[in-house]
Length: 218
Image (cartoon, rainbow, N blue to C red):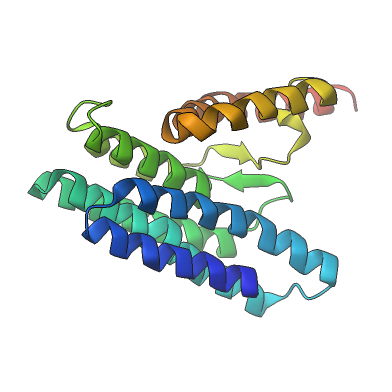
């Protein structure tokens, strides 16, 4: 529960920072919120305290950190009506995605639609890079529309710990992640966006291929 409270607290602070124009620090806080979100379920299972109360608390935290906060990023980055409309669309899509998560459970390690933390991190990276002039103006509008649609889509995505994403032997994975972490110290949002784009494009195909391989071996 403490990790969940940390998640929602970081989300609220990131909203405050966006309002005051500090997009880079706000983006870092959303990244930290996503890390806490990934840890809280694992810790709860290890401690044997997982339950419905924790699951719903986690969902509420996700609404703030991965729904409201990224919507503020979108709305403030351009300051135009089109950005606000996309921000509302994105927020509604995340709410629908979280509701479906509870109403239509999936096998462990598989998600129906792009998971809200991955959706939020991609959106945040796009908006921060747009504020820096690295991405052209208007990128957040297209990004918000595409990511919102992916969040509520019927496409199945594997979780980040799903074995289908281990495209390298374990030592190679450690080396790859180590290089990515070092690069992220200097180009945090750029590295994050590249990794997430690869995940969004390749992960569903890897999951589909794995499922078909398992069906063919039965």
